[in-house]
View (cartoon, rainbow, N blue to C red):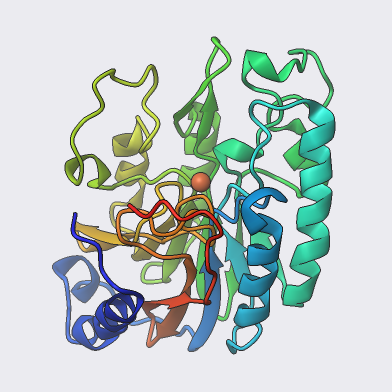
Length: 312
Ligand SMILES: [Fe+2]
C-alpha cells in the first residue's frame, strides 16, 4: 500500500464528509428520519501508552491536541497501554496508572473499550497465574467498568462491544461471545425504528486489512485481525439504523461499507507503535460528526515525531 503524506490523509478523509452527504444507501433510505441532535465526539484508539519511545509524551500531546476540538465526549477504542498481555502484573498496573494521569489532561468524559493489550497476564510468559484476581479482563472491569455496554446521547444510541476472546491456550482471538450476542439482540430490540446506532469495537467486525500486504509466511495461531464470528454480530444489525461501526486494533484508516453500514477503522494515536506511520497512516485520532442522523468522520494528526521511526 503506497504511503500517503499527513496532508493527503487529512484531505482524503475530510473529503468524505462532503461525499457522504449525498449518499443515501438503500438500508438508510427506507428508515424514518430520526430526531437526533447534531454533535461531535472524538474516537481515539490504540494509545498504547508506554514510557519507552516517548509513548507517554505522545499520548499527552494527543490529549492536548484533542482539547482543541469541540466535542461532547470521547470514546477510547481499546489498547490503552502497551502492554498488559505479556508482562508481570505490576508493570501493567503501573502503565494503567500512568495512562489515567495522562488522560486527565483531556478534561472530557471518556467511554472505554477493551483492547487485547488491556488484558492482564494472558500470555504464559507474563508469569501471571490463571487464578490471579486481576487476570485477563478482571482488572479492566474493576478499574474502568463493564467490557460491553450501551448509552444514549442526543438521540443516538451507542453500543460498545467486547471483541476480545481469551483462548484456552492463553492467547486471544477476535470474538463476540454468545452471552454478549444475546445482550446485543435485546439491547437493539428496544430501540425505536430509525434511531441512529453507533457501534464501537476494538477488533474490527469488517476489514480488508489482509488484502493490503502479503500474507505472513507462518499463519497466525488465532483469528486476530477481525472478529471471527462477525457474521453473527452483523446479523443482529439487520433492520436497525446502524450509522457507523467504529473500529481500532489494526492502526490504519480504512472504510468498508456493507449493506449500507460503514465499518470505519481509525488510525492509532501511537501510529506504528510510536515508530512512525503504519501502512501510511500517521499518529492521530478520528473526529466523528453526527449531522441530521448521519455519521461523518475526519482524521486529525497531532504532530508527534518518532525518536525511532520505522515507517510502513
Ligand atoms: Fe493496538
